[in-house]
Image (cartoon, rainbow, N blue to C red):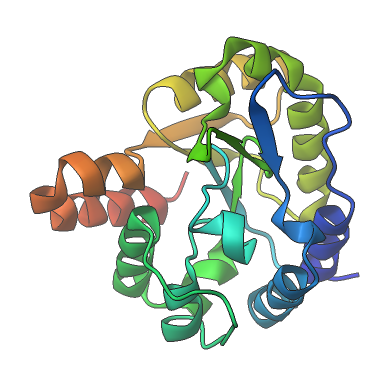
Length: 224
């Protein structure tokens, strides 16, 4: 089984087997037949080999990016425009996806980027409260309850062909602190390097977007 096959097997079996806290809704896009079909096309296109990748770790999928397409930081527009994969999803932009795909283009394009990196999240499943995105760390009961799920997901993904020397964390605050504590406990990587989160950049520092893209390129291209 190649890298793509391992990813798809993992996604097909994803399930949060504990009840979430009150008012928290779990988003599992991989249960949708059309979404999983898109994931299959994407991963077979970019990960149909046995090459090793470095892991880039986000928070959890949002409603308008990975929560729709099943592919981290990839909204339906960039899925088609950048990756060449058409879908029936409503065409709308998601801020983080805009940044990521401009960065990927500056890196050399999707084929070059995905040949070297695998993007995932602390929780591969998303969360909503009152129909709004919810980060796992913004509800302490949720954060505590999903810890076994998070560890299990990381341990399974380590078998894909992940370089365990260095991983990159999207988010320099709470996500990085959580990942650092987890890594100290379960020893996933030798080091984790934080990067500014795309959503933060696009929402609060849009005029400095090009500066942040160059920062990503410098960090991701560094030989650790």
